[in-house]
Length: 340
Image (cartoon, one colour):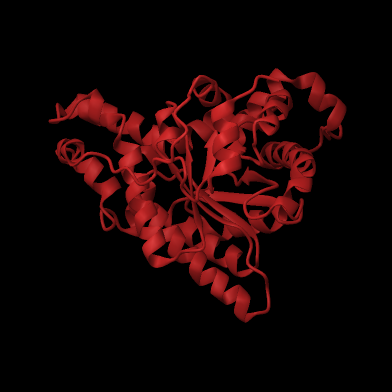
């Protein structure tokens, strides 16, 4: 096992929790050795592991029924991979909050259909008690998320890139958790993802296209500025839901958040970038410089992402980063699984 001292320090000495962002088992074993206590999957990652580690999954999953086709086939593969990983992680639940879980994402082809999302979520909840059901950060997703939280399910909002999106889900989880408690149900784990690196990717294209008054030295801080601001508001409002930085593009997306009460989704590539990191300090309290934020604010798309009131619920599904990521999850994840 390659020893990653930074990840070991962060997961063992701060309140930050490390989850592995990959469904490849050989990578997971190494991550667990460095402190990982959960796994995030999505259709893209399930498709990738099914194709790259076909022999492993042939040995560990039931043989696919050729009569199951289309969306049902894709869901069956997601179920098999998620169940297998969830069983591997279950022993870690005894270590406490946020540990011992595996995420599984609902069908990205239906981000605007709350009833569809709910029906699928109810099936996912039967897979294992430590499955976290990922649903889209859309208006329909907010509705389904609250209803699932009220049933005591573990839930995560994904394809989310902005402060308004995660705040909507923080509030939705709070409402759902209170309803669960009133009904005598123990609330599950609530997560609101902010895909910091994908936020940067989108805003970089916007910057280049609009010739905005900022540069690359600012763009690489855009996602961090959003999640740091959201974190402050989550703490002020005492939300039980926790933020999850994901879709990272550089080691700074983790080092600058170290010490936060967050669940960090860290892909093997990012873990590799942190291998030689030797600055073991909590940096969540360090703000992004006002000068960078001022330059980023020359882009209306950043203002939408950064300001708590930057978007209304109806605007979530149309935000550029949401559209492009949903498309990737459909075309490079879910759709290929329907015919695998």
